[in-house]
Image 1 (cartoon, rainbow, N blue to C red):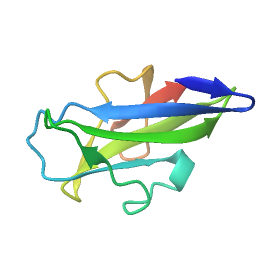
Image 2 (image 1 turned 180 degrees about the vertical axis):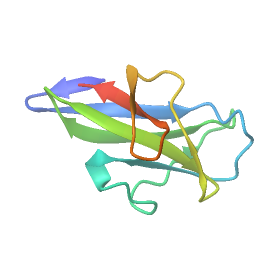
Image 3 (image 1 turned 30 degrees about the vertical axis):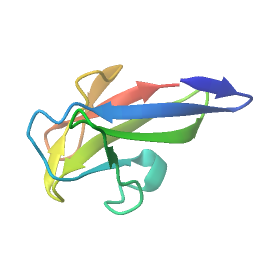
Image 4 (image 1 turned 135 degrees about the vertical axis):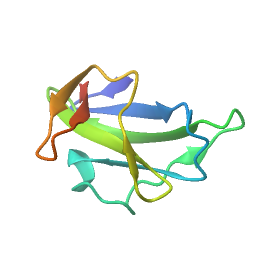
Length: 93
């Protein structure tokens, strides 16, 4: 994380243990959009995306692999139940 004033640049990285072809970062910060935050595939096969988030709060998020497989971040700060009977990853800024 890189903090500047009231916002912070946060890099989300998914290790891609499922060998997915694509990944999207979806969360409260983009109304859970499946198109707004496509992730870049890195040379090691993982996916990454860096975004600016407001400091002093928490954000729920998940990764969407290949357009329909929702997974959590294994390195999330914590997890919270969601309305689908699963859990969301949470990052605390």
